[in-house]
Length: 119
Image (cartoon, rainbow, N blue to C red; front, side):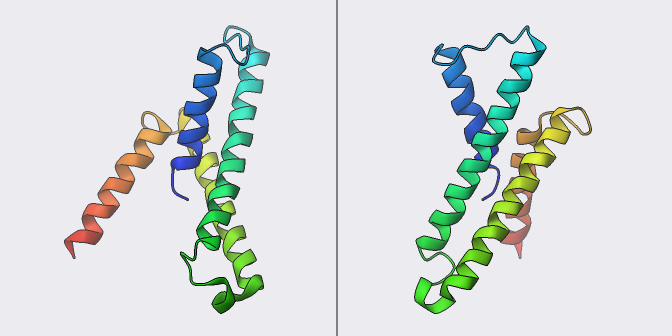
């Protein structure tokens, strides 16, 4: 999982709040904190779902080849990598970086792809 879990959870939560499916008053500090926490929890659930889907789809080899233990370790590694991305995004949103966290991750990913494809 790359940056899609925090970006997807953010978009879905904003859609739910904008369409008034969930009631959020952004002027209240408590509501903003709950909304942010729910967004992070939803991002973690998406991260776990993506990790399981990647392993089950055979992206890292067939399950019979890698075995159940390695499959669980790969899922755990992908999940914790997703958690790190969510935490880094939170740090960047709090002002410990340049601009929006997700925008910075997208730009970094594009630069990485350019470098890898150049060689």
